Image (cartoon, rainbow over all chains, first blue to last red; front, side, top):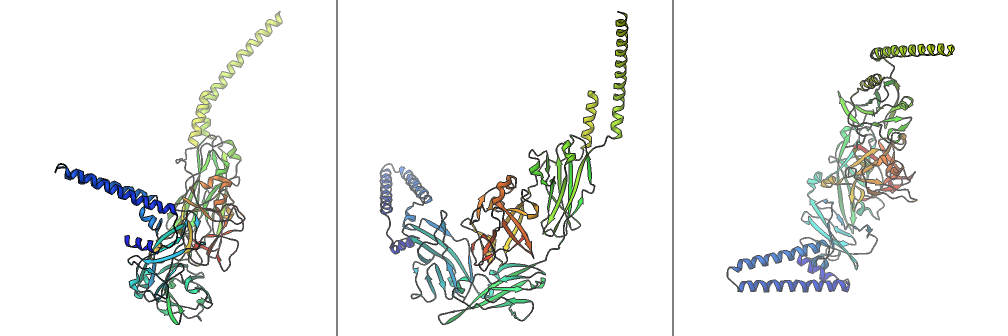
Length: 445
Length: 173
């Protein structure tokens, strides 16, 4: 790392700002000062009692530890000695390159968006190194097999021993960023291990695509691909496939379950008199096409539900969603054709949690409508359960009816009512008697 | 008279005897896979969603899409709010003459309750022959799109052409 660092400094021909230079020098001076102080103090302690020796070492160790911690803290601030010498920004590219032995490979130096600024448009000096090598990778004149050109690193062709980490450095006079890229070159026999997964649905049309050919198709008009399935060349004349010209796709008119497997696409790549071959392997998975079932509301079955004023109530809506759980079915309650959330802001009435169940391989979805307390307005509201998926929908209107006064209610209230009637009767009789008495007296006067 | 009222109330309680679960709102979040008709999956690069072919171990980089229906808009439009990272980073497309796609920190289960303010996060879905299109609710006529060239950011486009792919596969994981 130190060697590479020095190398970088040597390579670095860009003028750096004087403040940076000053900081570096000061940093160096500070380092020297601390080291000297430490040495001096250690020496002093050593000169003392012989038992102080161990103590001195501990002191020395702790000082150097705190100093290295200081350096670490600095490096977090992107101000460390190393990073000023080198780049403030070093990242590992998150994608790995997997390539085949003997084939052309292009690594691209990623252009990071540093602090949300896209630097790809700015001109940069880009340099390439292999992690375990000290020398910079130069142009094609220096090495006809591995060379750097612009933001790309070419291998023509790549070999298994090229596997490793490549570091590209983007630099201009105000910015520098390093990115490490992992390249793995495998033997052709291992092509399936580095396949690209792709998916198609059975009994529909669709295409698979020969990926990552971009670098090899620039400035090319004819792009002829050969497609193989399990090493067998696919013919264009069959009705099954359509070879889209000037496209990197293989079109299936109707995908069958037996179409799953490994596909290989090959493209010839002529470069300065030599023709190379580029191979990509695709692992095609075929997924059964879903059954087209529109949802069916199985509950509520009745048009009305009775409830008493002030009571709690739950109205469940159960929907048959068919045997295919892959299709999303939306189940929702509406009040006067409006979402429940919007009508009942205080959540007096609200939708309960969606429950998904499977009964004998069939899927059901249930969403309850919960009334915390039934109010009179509910008897005049249109409630609807709506079930919808991509193939259709069903709506089931339902109403809440005030509970008719039942027999038990009567039985419970009859004695009370009777008592009331009797009491009232007595009262009326008494008053009437009083009035007749008074009337008589008045008449008398 | 008080006795009558008490009896009435008691009876009302009995009528509402359907077991009532602890109230919970319908906030189920669905986890789906999305990929374009050119078989490109989505992954994150510099906090941007990018579409590309992912090979070998790179396939693990694919971002799964978490989504909820947005009931504020008409259900016929199949409105959805989508996000990645368990629905904590949501796809947003605020109204603009040239709309751009962003990822915003948001709770996907809360967004549908924000009414009209949820429009930048909402997409209307249309389905045809196994493929979906996603139209920005805040920018009518603009659809989610990938670039025909691999490893380019997910964006928005008015119509499909040689450079833009508007059709996606959208499946439960």
